[in-house]
Image 1 (cartoon, rainbow over the protein chains, first blue to last red):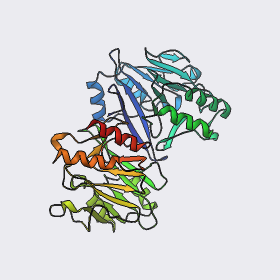
Image 2: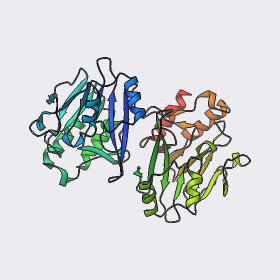
Image 3: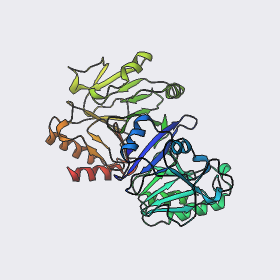
Image 4: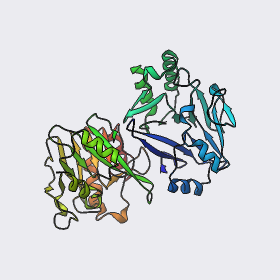
Length: 199
Length: 199
């Protein structure tokens, strides 16, 4: 796994040839048990790396289109899976916990529910106020510039735009780690405000 | 290949497990013949993608430690290879052209010779004043923050630092594409100035 912008955060990616972008997983290494977010497949090397950092306690999925390798990783570890409460009735894999807007997955990792995206109640996660982690709605196909899903993928564009506005109002976001495409590591709030201006 | 910050630039990467960073290649797609810089191995998918964009005319290598897949790509195409004149006498593969400080590889792609790095006269490239492409000296292991090679890798630290100062004085750099690690897509000049302040 690759070091991100903080020593306790790692990322790894799987190139998607259909879209010519990377799909990204995030690992937060923490004393109370490590957390993976939207994990793509781990190579043997990255698996060993993760094990050397303490394995995994929780897998958090932002939406049902990002289950990726979650089930396989959970099957091979004691990891539990958490997912959006908005998809409770139709989630494709077993989940141990349903996450609700405003709660914390663990201390420091806040749940933000988005509306109108590809799936009901897609989640974003805010790590210690400064690192925003997005699933599908906010993404980046062009490096250095955030975008959102195209209209035809949205359940409700007006709600989706309102949700992005909510993200852009977060006061201290420096980094935006996207599930799909190019993450932004500096001045994330400025990039979110630029995004809002295009919607 | 992945779209970078301009529609005529693409990047692709090869994860290096020894260092837990990506090694990156860059492709500039242009009417007069496409240019690859420090190309790592291309997957079949990326090879087809590159062919669909017009193949490759020139491969530019910033230093002899970044030959990577250049020879294989040249063997399978009509691509010619250009490399730093500072390594003319000892370059490990055949080169068709030796690049000199201040000249242009092709119009818009300027050669900058650095001193004191791991190899004599390592090159950086400046694309249309706004995109700086570095080989080994300037790199990023921590996302969002540029660094340089450790002292023990440098031929001459004083000269290397002076070369980085020269890069930080480039007036219009918005993007820094690094050969090793995390590229910076916005406010590149600020990141270079921050780097200089740490040296």
